[in-house]
Image 1 (tube, helix red, strand yellow):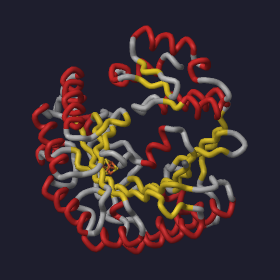
Image 2: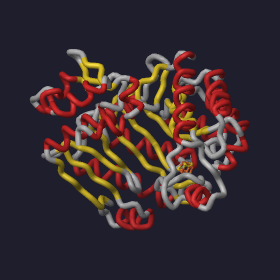
Image 3: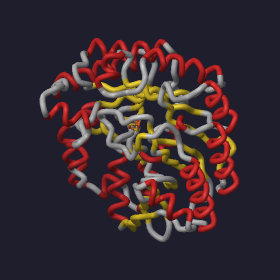
Image 4: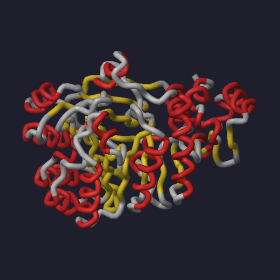
Length: 378
Ligand code: SF4
């Protein structure tokens, strides 16, 4: 599998917890859309990309700030420049309250076939505390318009561990999302990133987060609830109805190739070696370089096979099904258990693995303590 990621680094306003590369702006400047299309052309002409792409993902930022015309132009340029499968998954992130009926119809018509809508909580007071721009009612309206536009593969992002959030409020959110019948739920714990507004508010005592035990209990209760409603956990924080796992993210966790386009986008490609690249994180520089016909890559790292192997384990063990032993053997010429005997021994001693001939995986206890489990492979 291989995917294309396009980064749209603009949001109406910065959420209090956000440290992604995103800048406050009322829309996507035409100069940025033009620069992205130029980058698509440059990369295509350089010829350094996989033989076929299975997925396209517009992430951000807020891709739903793209106008219908900008989306049509971008998808048109991608289709002309790269070998994208006809049945590719084409996803975009949507922030409720930023997408008009007209735009949602235009995205669907242009070829987008999966939406990932950021809800986070069904409680408006919590949305307000974390600086989201929308209410729960606006989320419901966006979902209903998306369905009217023909979207039948929809993810909703929810969060736990928010300031002042109770387990009851978290389960209310999950119940609401399940009752709405979406196909996929991403259920992440809030990460308090340094130097965000929320971090400052917590540091100075204006806000309090649930403690570690409360957050872990919320997480456990949430996971059990989602599974009881027919959503199968397939990655640490991701749940799907059968057949609706996100193919784009599965490719990341399988350490497959992907091409990143746009500000701060990352790529992982098999050139001579397994190679990771990152674009500049500054929109002005990105636009300036592309207007001069230059690629905006600011960092290129060629990995040794041992590092590539380590990445495969770190990413693959996030999946409930774990690391595919045959694929690992084919890629590195060695079985994963033989490549990391000490780490495997530590996991077995703690009872954190599920091993079969086909795969090596962490069980629920191992997934809950994943950082510790992965530490053995370092
Ligand atoms: S919408 Fe997403 S990317 Fe934009 S500020 Fe909020 S969390 Fe960050």
